[in-house]
Image (cartoon, rainbow, N blue to C red; front, side):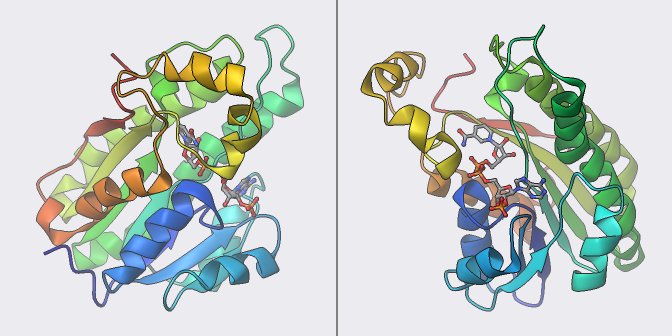
Length: 242
Ligand SMILES: NC(=O)c1ccc[n+]([C@@H]2O[C@H](COP(=O)([O-])OP(=O)(O)OC[C@H]3O[C@@H](n4cnc5c(N)ncnc54)[C@H](OP(=O)(O)O)[C@@H]3O)[C@@H](O)[C@H]2O)c1
C-alpha cells in the first residue's frame, strides 16, 4: 500500500522541517522528489542527502515568475505539495505593507501560480495529487498572526474550489492543518521553557508534534489509496483546534 513508484513529486519548502519529512517519506515510497528551497541550491543539496534520489531545485516563491522558474527545473510532476511559507509575527496595526505582501505572495499567490503551471499535465494524464499545507491558525486566532492566518484560510478556500473543479480529472486537492510542530521555525521560541509550557497547555495531547507526525497523512493523500479523499481539510494538531 501507499507505493509511489514512477511518480514525480515537488515538495515546496523541503530543505527542513515538515517539508523535509514529507520529501523523505514520499521518496521512501518510491517517488522521485524535487527538494525545493529559497535560500541556496547548496542547502537544497544538503537536504537531498536525506531524501533518496532527491533532486535539488531553487526558487523564491515571493517572485512573480516563481512558477516558471520552478517548472524549468522540474518539468511536469504528478504530485504537488504546497508546503513553503513565511510568517511574520506582528500586531495587526504594525504589519508593514512589505510584510503583508510577502506573506500573501509566498503563502497564497504562489499556490495559485504553481497550480496553473503543474495542473495541465495532471489533467492530460487524468491523475494528480495536490496537498496544501495550512495551519491551526485557520481556526485559532493568534493576535500576532492575523495576516499569516488569513493567507492560510485563503489557500484552503482555493484548495476546496480546485478540488471541486479538478475531481472529474482524477486529481485530488486537500489541505492539512498542522498545530505546533517542532521545526527550525519554532526552535528558538520553544527553547524558552516558560513559553513552551504556556503553549503546551493549549494542546490537548500535551506535547508538540514532530514533522514525522505530519508526513504520513500527506502520503495517504498522495497515494492511489487516497483517491476518494478530496476537498478535505485535515487538522494534525494534537487537538489544538478544539
Ligand atoms: N512548524 C509549525 O509549528 C507549523 C504550524 C502550522 C503550520 N505550519 C506550516 O507548515 C509548513 C512548514 O512549516 P515548517 O515549520 O516546517 O517551516 P520552516 O522550518 O520554516 O521551513 C520553511 C521552508 O520553506 C522554505 N521557504 C521559506 N521562504 C520561502 C520562499 N520565499 N520561497 C520558497 N520557499 C521558502 C524554506 O526554504 P529555505 O530553507 O531555503 O529558506 C524551508 O524549506 C509551512 O507552510 C507552515 O506555515 C507549520
